[in-house]
Length: 162
Image 1: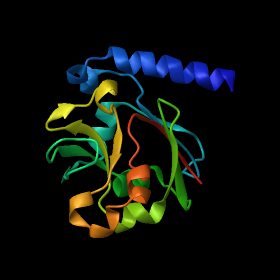
Image 2: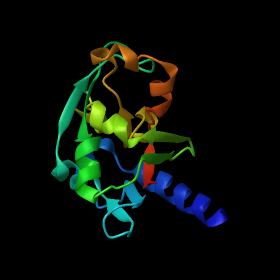
Image 3: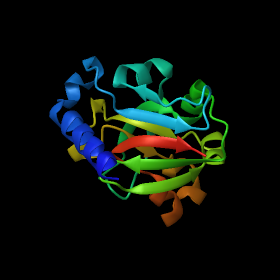
């Protein structure tokens, strides 16, 4: 457990020290996906690698932002397909040790994003980045609940498919 805390501290310090504008050019790993994925070996991703998988956009009001920010990132369904996810849920861990579990059906039902950008700018750790799982709250009334807000994790560091 101490080793995991040390690794997360190193990642937090590493990603926090990268200016958001330089994130796409950095070779820093910002996401690890493991668990029930193709090959069974953890996969590490940089911002550039995530961007190369596919790109989507959501404009939606959230409880944490003023106005209607525009989020850009890789669609979660595309990302899960890319890694060959075969489980039923995603256990998400954030840099601040926040944890949430999301049924994979959410990602097939709604166009959920793993956002890297907000309003055209890479998100810093201070601004809920570098990765933020965001639901299209304005497009589906059923998403405007505490349940889906709790699944909208920011400062995402790792996803374990179970």
